[in-house]
Image (cartoon, rainbow, N blue to C red; front, side, top):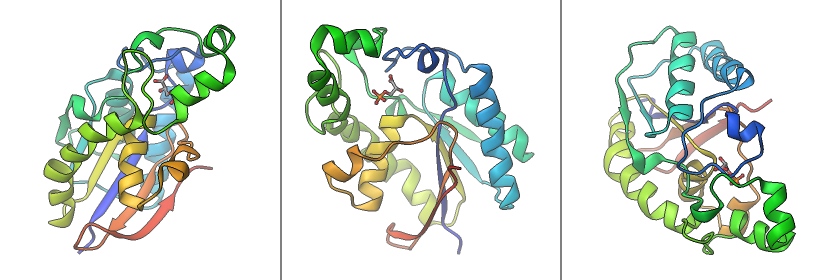
Length: 206
Ligand SMILES: O=C(O)[C@H](O)COP(=O)(O)O
């Protein structure tokens, strides 16, 4: 049995391009983001992978990435389940602020702590730990049972919602996961064992 799980971060968004904290805001993909999404589909096609079900967040940039990828893969009508449990971490009061301007205002170190510490939330927002507290129950109850049952699953989501998932999946420490940067539109191909642990992993970033 294959037990395929592919995770992919959305392609570049308008706010990634403008270097703004995005969180739960809903900007569209840029042209580059569209190309990255298609390229991700092309990479999966080259590996001859197909899917039985797709999961994505309630945000357009992830949904559109998934749709473009599936079109490229020749599976435009694949069953797709959208849930805000997979949304990006909520950036709270930082949402919409330029990341360089935030560093000038609050200091480099403080902004780094908000962006990359495990358990310190940005003001009014979610830490990675809080993000994991909504992503992981959803993964364990909705997604993992289907993978274990042999369905081939793709998840298109966000830098920090996927980090939360990868931390658990790969058994990484808070220090290890915070160093892990996920490329836009770079699929990670996991094959799982029947207990949900990783049998193999292939990161398709170039
Ligand atoms: O929400 C955002 O701004 C980005 O998608 C991820 O931000 P980060 O690189 O600060 O984690």
